[in-house]
Length: 190
Image (tube, rainbow, N blue to C red; front, side):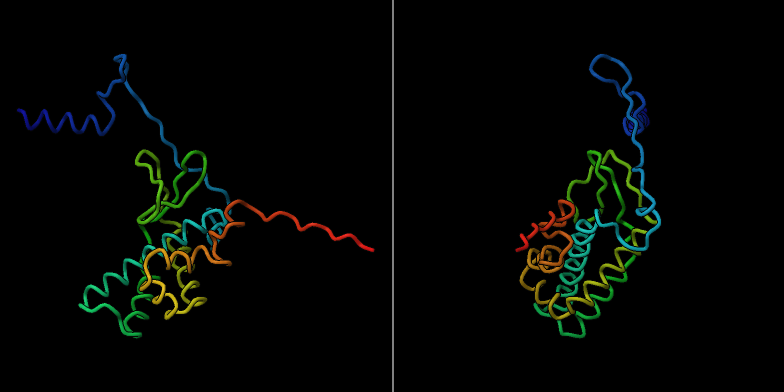
């Protein structure tokens, strides 16, 4: 009887039934999915507002894949052919564990390696998100090159994030995260 009671109590707490607030009133929560704009639902490209989060997810996945590969071969550095293969595999993975959550009225990408994930929110996964992350990952590898990415990985996770996300052209660079850059001052004409 006690195991059945324990299971019922655990299930009712998880489902929210039987839970009561301090005054004895039933406690209810309403959680809705983020409302996605047409660009967020339909564009083949990652929306500008989510590119910084996407870059951090990509850097995290690349770092994890390279770290695992180095651990498997039992030596510190991978050969060029090995790290090229790992980077290709990193970018071609499924990315299904990533999606969008709305936190404090702001849409954020959520998944492994990303901060600010709330357990009591709805995360929209699948759809265009895996393809967008894969496309961005391949773009970074093409722009930066495998050797430069692997070199940054060897210097540490912060160096890889700096290379991909925070450099002059990175999606997390100072002026981009806060919206459009301020207009240029007009020069006086003589």
